[in-house]
Image 1 (cartoon, rainbow, N blue to C red):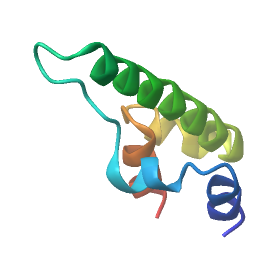
Image 2: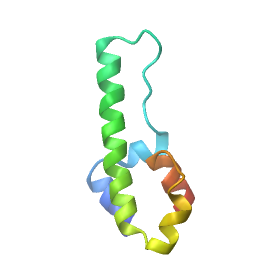
Image 3: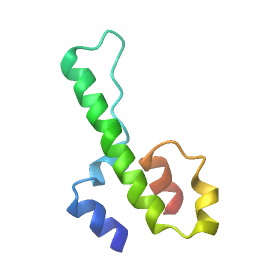
Length: 75
């Protein structure tokens, strides 16, 4: 509950609900910008999640690629 509140307050919940935006092939400059911004936000959320997890549990989720994957594993 506390982590969910933090993520909502930082406006990161949509990212963990929908996942990272990926630029399509032949993407426009705007699509690339949005995808890069999404990747950066994903890294920030992953950092929050990693900091909140006990080290013994952390090893089981380090194989997850995105914040959404980590969040789903933590549920």
